[in-house]
Amino acid sequence: MPPMNKDKSFLSNPEWVKGTCDCGIVQFEIKYPARWSYHDHSAGTRSAMGTASVTYVGSWRKRFKITNGEDALSDYRNDDKALTRRFCIECGTPITYERDASPHMVNIPRGLFREGVGREPRYHVRMSEMPDWAYTGEQVNPLKDYPTVLYERPRKSKKLKTPEDMF
Image 1 (cartoon, rainbow, N blue to C red):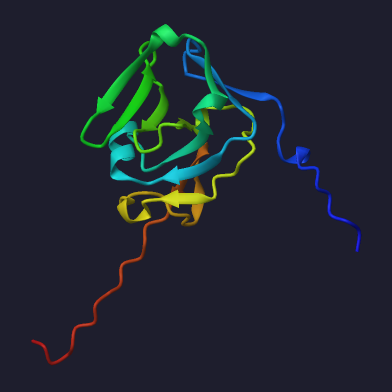
Image 2: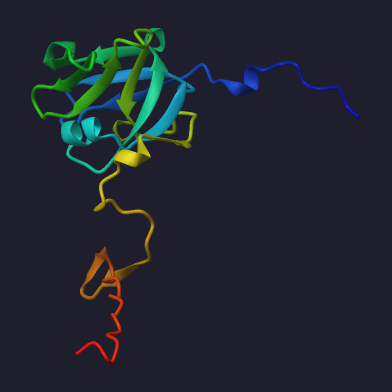
């Protein structure tokens, strides 16, 4: 058996991965690879983001930097939940989600990066809070005359059989 390669340099890339808000004013970078990536199905994230779930990228704070537009960032502080969300004041894009319980970490929505971050989102957080209207992988079909729209066929309702001697 050949000896194991003890050089772990292939696990990380010295490059920084760039992200930006929708209007482009706020720009930031994280050091590749990200620490983790996960899907957040929590009610708190749903109400803050307006979506069924959000995919976040986690980074060590020391490996995250705002490269442009720091003065265009505003904070929303939730003392009850001990968290801070930062967003662009120009376009409203959420930039970071920071928890007091993890002061050395910062979470950034995955959609703000155009390039790979070195982590696939393999974790799901708070699936028990997922709303009943969230897409969960049902078959979708193209909508006639709208090639970019897919729809779910309605679920067939089960007909209840009434006993013949009921009436």
